[in-house]
Image (cartoon, rainbow, N blue to C red; front, side):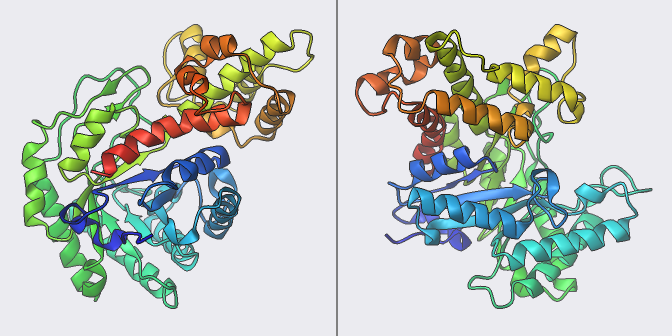
Length: 425
């Protein structure tokens, strides 16, 4: 199979084959395996990205360095019989954000160490994000300082990538939705102006030139913009092509560049297709995939309770609730309202802050116990209808076996399929 190179993604729409690519932003092994299974029959490469807070030289919140992350992904690929030459590893928001409470020079030194580790580990798509202020600086930096620091990190990546089979490609720009989704219900968003994105590209190009990185800038393949998509705890703002039409037309002035859209989770298939058609060729998805995983696991948890009412097993939901209460840092400041409202959001928010708790040992043990209990059990259709109703038609048609693992993969693959269909053009 001739796998298209992301280096030339701006030309994909002019050729036969895909027009865009989903960016899977997750470190959950079940999500990654399901994504591989979904992409495998297509002609798309699979882009998997880690964030600076998730994976870095200090381990991030997953406990993984870039090398660790790569090893994990390749082990999953081996299990799923997914060709390594179709894998693209990316680093998202690479910059000083994990250390922004420190002095700027100290934080940037750490950011340099981090991006060197990403590049040396073979991550080839690097999003440079130095927009945040460090200790004693404004919360958000101006374009010139952001670009200067981004160029500094690109220089570090270039050095670390010497000897790698592929030179890195870069993504610039930082006009993204609130990480993890907005806190409150949202009704609309301001689309990035054409002037703002032209300035972003121009200022970054100048900063790269000043740093002696003109050739590296030729490998800038995308700019992050706000096309008017977002999700909060309760709702989703759907892409409106009319509102983004001026921004989309700006791409004609930016040869070799496409737009990267963050927080495209929960967009309907038609919106995803419109995004790709309008030049937002890189579609980030993360919480939407782990939301589907959580739905499937909770459905199976209820099914296990019906099949084995006398089991002494603690429910998965109770295990997750205990874990989130014991360590509230990853949800407390994101979920407002009464105690009851916060309890509901901990489990069912679109922001899916529960995804930070699946790697915990108690959570992993609880999931393992659930899947062991249902191992080799043909789950009755009426229970699938009741608790995993969206998968019933595929079970009845024998497309999906009524087994726990197959149902989990099917739930995640359903989300991936919307992105695959949109990106195939």
